[in-house]
Image (cartoon, rainbow, N blue to C red; front, top):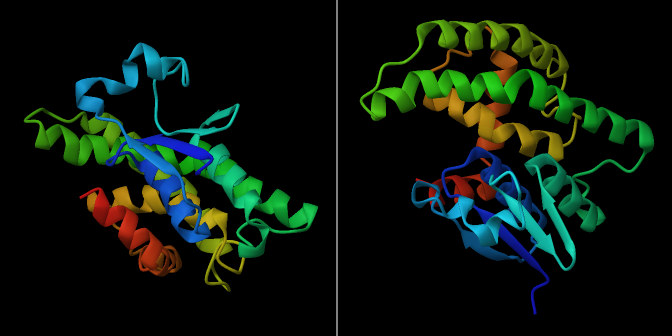
Length: 208
């Protein structure tokens, strides 16, 4: 009997992050796709699991986890033989550094840039050019940091790790919104490398 349940949305980048990790780790979970348009994430039953009404949420016995990076980290630590989480404290601190950098400097402006480029137009609305510009400015501050880190390596920590998995959804929405990565060729090559992995292709194609 499978021990874990994952509640997610097919289109949600945070859900893709966790499902990418699951696919790379070879972990089996019971998947429960929620239809956000129908408000299934706001149902009383789901709110008992995640009081913020967001996805994804992982249930492992009595343990209930939300926040996608926390879920992915928890799962990766269940499979140490896959080496997605470094073994030494110093290397794990490096992983955490890049996860926090993603959360504070990359993920939100990437989503807002996408939102103000694609989603408004798809819904027939008008984007906010000021917010789009502000998001682009924040990304122009963060991406050189990633470029420097990737100068002499193929992945953020050298070998493929949870850090690369975590960034995949944000880099994907930037590509979908036509954000130009030409000034940061190392970032562009890294994103293409990560998005070429079979596990990402499966997860991303399932959301299309």
